[in-house]
Image (cartoon, rainbow, N blue to C red):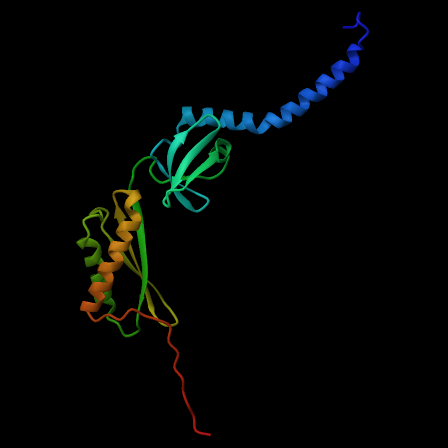
Length: 197
């Protein structure tokens, strides 16, 4: 090139600048590629796992070299760059097992029989075939609220992907059982006192 009259030093500078530009442009691609290799070899997530990322539950459908495809409970497919799965916090609900704990909060009116409420909630959990027997369901009396006594039912289920169905089933059973036991579900109330002028 120098014998043809080209100045090699200027071409070297141009090629060097071009290489730096290409390097910066491919930085994200290389980062995702390396992260994809980490996901494939370390396997912190696998196809079929239920993960929680950005507050959304999703099932891993495909792990590629550049991106991972997940499907939300609304059947929407999300393409997540592999670097996000490696560098950000991801909760894998099914890495070692598919069990998950449900919490069902609720409030009853003041004056309700606390023991009866707790027994009824435990009976509702035990009546469900989807609730695990061990560890046993647990009911906690959490607090005295403005208009209600707050309780929380905690129960384990065997399949994380069924958590919303089981929660709905428990809500229905609790509503039915509370009606039978004459336990009033609380709602905000205000007392108005009128004085004569």
